Length: 421
Image (tube, rainbow, N blue to C red; front, top):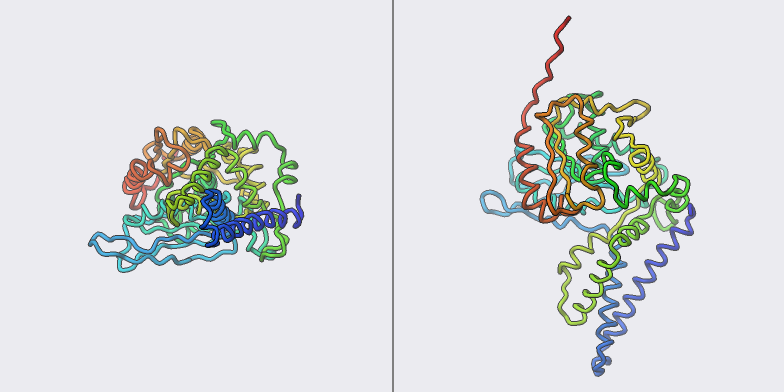
């Protein structure tokens, strides 16, 4: 599978479907067909419109779409999206609110690198902006990164997070969502040993696989069923000549999207069938609920091959974080070295990707942290998406996270030194 031809074959299939949709939409929209009373004409045009948009948005990075927020004085404040640290594989981006004094809460939102862009957390950012200065990790599409930029695996990801935390300073409160949860924990522990003054004030871990074996899901079962050799052969491809990263080994976003959809195939099929009918009846719009969701859900990015494989091998199969055996550059990262950073875990009771138990396992690893600085929450009835961007986040979890941040703001108390013998 590690050939450019397989990568280009997938892109050819995507491009062909987009073209077929555009052709059907254009052909069935000719005025002459208005004389026909056959409903198949409208359905064909609607199928073409939905199909063209579906396959077209798979390769387009969504816009943040956050133009302004309402300030406490009732006026609109424009929001500038500014990269403040630029790196080959990802930037640290600030949502700078014009005409507003720096907020008391300074938040680093760690976005997942699991096939979707950081814009997946758009609603999370929008909900935090009125009360916080928000920064986010904006990971780049691996197909656009030249081979000359080198590798990027879980150790490099951890070092990126440590560098971003250093840049933001010790008054930072980190919120990690999904995939980066164990690596955000590792990056904090790395700073605890290497640069204690750069540690954040608090760390909120939302729905991440600190210990994948704590509760089985389809994701963990898949990791157990296949060997690393099989996974490399089936999942890793080389970027085609069309892109800047030509020749780079990647786990294609289109393959990841296929696995996402296969987990809920019937629900997605029903959603698209109903959307075609709505378009045919003239009941759909450019920003209706279906398009708002799928414009984001279908926009996928490639991950570097070494990042994908090292995640499966070291986080899921080897359980290096769960067993406190993770290393960076040959040096062990001891989770127990965290003694000052308050840590809170958040899980969804109905999470089928990172089931309850996987994230809260982080608290057991924090052997040097007093219980007063540990907290956990399981949201009843919430699935994976709901705990960071859905109704559960808006109504219940966001207030809890902000209260946790407030309770742990200010300079931490130094742990008491052991009395001399």
